[in-house]
Image (cartoon, rainbow, N blue to C red):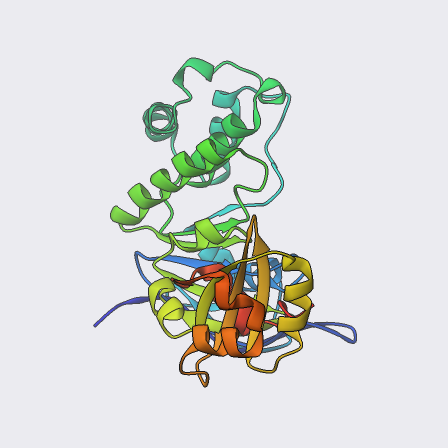
Length: 308
């Protein structure tokens, strides 16, 4: 039986008349990388703060690592790591000084944290930068230091709130390799993102919109259960064609990708290529190619976007 790191049932969080989280249910297995995908303002960060005990839910039940939250939030804080979206370390301290500071916050003995600091510097490629003041570091270097400090005390559960929003693709890829290493060592990771390629890397994925969970499963399962067929169209006047397609109730969405139009057609249409050619005769001579679903297609299909 799979052990559960996070269990949240019917979570609601209101700020006055505004409902930031609306009836969210979550189950996160231990040792997994669980992703939250959604646009800015959809409730991802608020959910993270409720799960860590930083915010008290308006209603619902939260259990994290066997602890009732927010009642046992103080006990939880020693067992989790939290990397915020905005860089939150001290620019006027060196890399080593930041790591020492975090170690002391968690009450680590000096002989323990001195050895642990050397390990972290090596793991995250910061050894040559250990005396560097943080204010002069690049975005990628700061990101690695943030992860090093968040895992300094070897937490059982790691919360990452859009951790790669300010770094380039190469640093993002390296960062995810480090997350997989942590996962292999047994660390449970809950990460928010609005990057589709990152979402595909997660073991399991929740898609949020307007405070609600619209989908929750393994990325491959979500893509396979999409409920649409996808046809890429290469033809003249794509902008005009897109508008005409979106007027058809059989079409879930249409988006231009370079010289092609990616069209999501509901599966009630059994032969989408024939349907396109019948409905739009100019496409008889066009290039129409079936395509595999992507997480972006899933996101468009389960949220309210895509028919603008």
